[in-house]
Every structure is written in structure tokens, then in C-alpha cells.
Image (cartoon, rainbow, N blue to C red; front, side, top):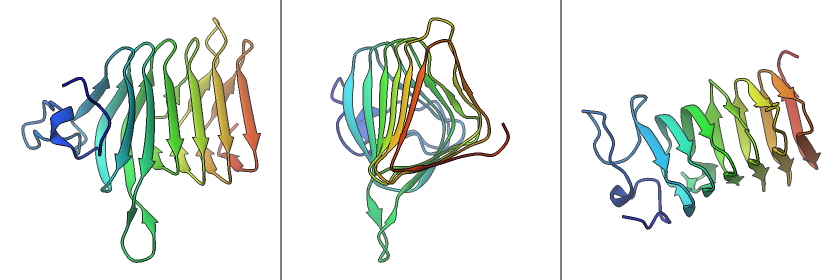
Length: 168
């Protein structure tokens, strides 16, 4: 509907092709596509699994986990693949995200993991030959990557946070 702000469970945002869940991307077969040039702040209000998130060119998306339960646990989103397109921005702001297949930052993409976020990911590629991608892990966040590939003038900043690379 063109208005993307609001919880991930807000049915108005999603048209999922999964036969079992038509409301929001909450199964491994669902794909969420954020259109070109959309700006959105999307709270993760329930723990769930989704198949793929794709940010189209120029989109700017902030994902924030809300507290669930009595112990202030963050709602956790597991996404099979997280894809960025030219000039998009993603911010994990106090978010708990798992992406077993990892993600890549292509030309002009900015990625920020901030404010005590927790990210566990497969490979992270920040080595597009057209450069200018930027990844920052800051604000007491924790990031755990399988492999991280950095090159061709792209930048990674780690500030007051922990980044673990499981392989190389």
C-alpha cells in the first residue's frame, strides 16, 4: 500500500506467495521485497522465519526487535537470504537477526548493525568491484559471520562491538 512503517506482522504490507501463510513473511517459502526508494522502519514484533528479504535500489530499511517475554528477550527473525541492491541501506537497530545464507553489500550499499544488535550470518561479501559499500558494527553489538570477504575499496568499521569470523 506504499506505507511500509509498522510491525513485520502488519498484514497490509505483505503479499506472500506461500500457500500456508498469506499474511506476513513467516515461513521459509515467503519472500519480502522492499520496493525501490522506500523508507521504512519495521519492528520485528514476533520471532519468526522467512525465506528471503530483498531491498531494491535506493530503499532504506530499519529493522528493530521488540521485547518478548518476561526476560526482555528480543524477537528473533531468521531469514534464509538477505539481498541488497544498488544504493540501498539496511539498519539492524537493536535487532536479533539470523541469516544462514549470509548477505552481500553491493555498490553503494550501507549496512549498520547497532545498539546491542545480535547478528549470526553465513558468508558476508563486501567485495563488489565497483566499491563504495560500507558495513558498520557498533554500539555494543555482536556479529558472527561464517566468512567475510572485504575488498576493492569497500569499508568495514567495528566500534565498541564484537565481530567473530568462524572461518577466514
